[in-house]
Image (cartoon, rainbow over all chains, first blue to last red; front, top):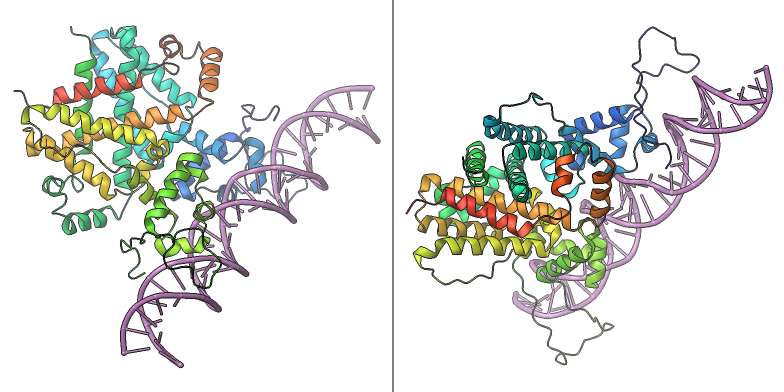
Length: 231
Length: 231
DNA sequence: TGTCGTATGGTACGTCGTACGAGTCAACTG
DNA sequence: CAGTTGACTCGTACGACGTACCATACGACA
């Protein structure tokens, strides 16, 4: 536990140059934190949360299992890094007109939600992981936007958490209904078998066809209406 | 996989009656689904999600590990049952005056949130587990209340999911900040060490002292304002 | 007395995270 | 040039896990 995890960039392996000295050809580039995290995300996308094991990760990287532990403290670390990786923000860094703050907020939050829905495992992972720099960066951006829009400092925390909660809730709900696969079967079974116990749910077909995107936008509008300073 | 998991109630062991025939005294009551679930909740409360293992559960129950599998399909099953157990609803079953629907909704949702905060593991578990009967029961109750309050069927799903999302988001956020313990250390470190990167967050002390309950109530009010029919 | 459904649990297998320590290699020091 | 150091890789091994398989016990009924 010393100098480990310096932001060591692996130098691009320029092919043809510097022929491999004595060893049998190593067809994989050297390990790096970057490669590990990228591969972990791939693995999570392909196999889900339980599909990520250190052995499989090493296999994909063409390395020994224990080599990973030079770059990473433990498996939880991998989860933290993968989660934060997925939440990198590549948004317009342009200064926005002050009167467009609402559109700016909506854009930030929808991008956030989209990023997580692209990797459904991230939604179920976030509740129990630490806040990485990218997550904090998004929170900071949101804070600044609201602050510049005129939200008083005293109301800022309430505003931020309300919006955060909305994004988290919508995303998690959406994602957990997306990847179930037996969702339809289970829901159908419950609805037909127990329709007399849950008549209202059945009537509104709550579990079968809901407009996730519309719900997100509509709830967001209500929150922003309430949070925004009158003007 | 046949008649298993019938709601087999274990008959109360009436002490003194029917002396133990030949075996050495079995000081534990017989296994039952009920006992298993209750003990699983205790174990989760005490040790957290990773603390629940089939071996530890069996140890607490004074039984062999494999005996659990007569009552339960697998470990995921235990999670589902424990989660739903925690969400039993013991609310006032009274018929409410139609003009009090708003208080009724607030009560239902606050009770929901309180139940989950009593068992912080439930918040991080819910996103990836199936909907049990108690959860569906709460959704049904919420649906009926809103429906009787005059929310049109077309808007019902949006209303329910918006409220559900709010409860989920608030609870998960709150719970994940509650049980971290290194929260303060990590947050402090980030704030002092990286204060120039997240100035707005630092200024508002977002990660240190936020009013979770107030945020929940205020966001809920905004949502209800938006969702309720004008009257 | 047998047979059957209900219930218990010991043993064993494959998989997991990771501690430990030996190994390789480039860069630097003298 | 030899020697040392530090960055990095990885084979082996250990304890813990979920659970498949199978032997057992017991009350009820034939």
